[in-house]
Length: 516
Image (cartoon, rainbow, N blue to C red):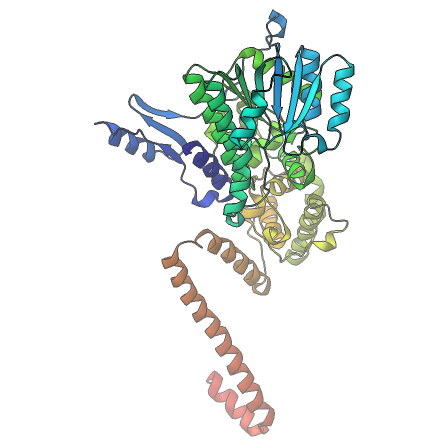
């Protein structure tokens, strides 16, 4: 289960980057040099996924898969019967048709609902009419007896390959994840895979294909349980391959298929830069991956210019830094300077305005772009003094706002701009300072609210440090008492002045301000 813990840890690193130190694997047997290697691993501040071994410290990296094998005539062809778990779900029809085209003698689609699943019977009849007999069966793959019955069925040619595509997800942040959520997600993915691995070892079939997810490879916000389950599958494939079994785990991005790329989670991943893959393109990639006979491959359609800034917003992510796309975008970003043409029009509008009007103009610009990012119909929905986080801004929205403001101002802004400057008004102050090269002249009545927002952002970073939190709470209570005392003094003074005679008022002024 260590791999599942790592999967969960990667999600923690995305959702709570300020508290994430990384993941380190240590050997079961502690050697003479293990302690020194561990200290070396912990002393550096860049790598966040490391393994301490007998021969040194190893880091985790993604690399490009070899070039297409199709040109060399090498490929995978299914023989005998192929069984698909989760076969009546969003991917079932696409996999079944692909298997039929690829030469499977028989296809067995299993799921909890079996023939009761919408469209399952019609699909089986369609494939049978085209020449590939197809069976749809109800089976709980976490039940060893039910699975054994399906695998031992003699109504069709022997099962040679099992594609384990069953699984469920929960779109929830870690702090809201319940034990029941975790159990539900792990059940079909992990327990089913373990039972299939046992039957593979017993010779019930020849090849196991595990459908994993990139949530287990690089993490996924709000995908803690799913990342844990899929990281387990990837590690299981490695272990079975080391034992001589024919196993491939395919970590998928988004499929443009029912149940895979839709809903709020799919929309969020699309905004992150993970584009839904057309099913035909996805199964072609699967065919090629099986032809390569790799143990673990990740298949995704990634818009790296969108994905990289959001993924690396809080910290460097060495996992992907060696990929050619990431290197190219990072190098371009390092060379990128301010676009003076983009700033010229805005500077002309700012020229001649006093400090207050300049701040109003820039605040309006920020609110307009923030409204577009959040798909509001009017910038009036954006409150200049309200924190971006409270409006629903996440890392993806911050990247989009950065792009828009960079285009409008000509400034080279960081992807974290909406978190470094927590309200539209504060961000407008920063833009003014960058554009004009002078510190913003902001009245105290406006500045005080910006300071409070900045304080709120800092407090969030130390929320789990009880000692600091208690000291801060005491200091804040002192400040509140000071504000209340001032207000009470003012109220008392007003009451006294309201009932005083002219002589008493002048006497009060003389005493208060030392006049004579």
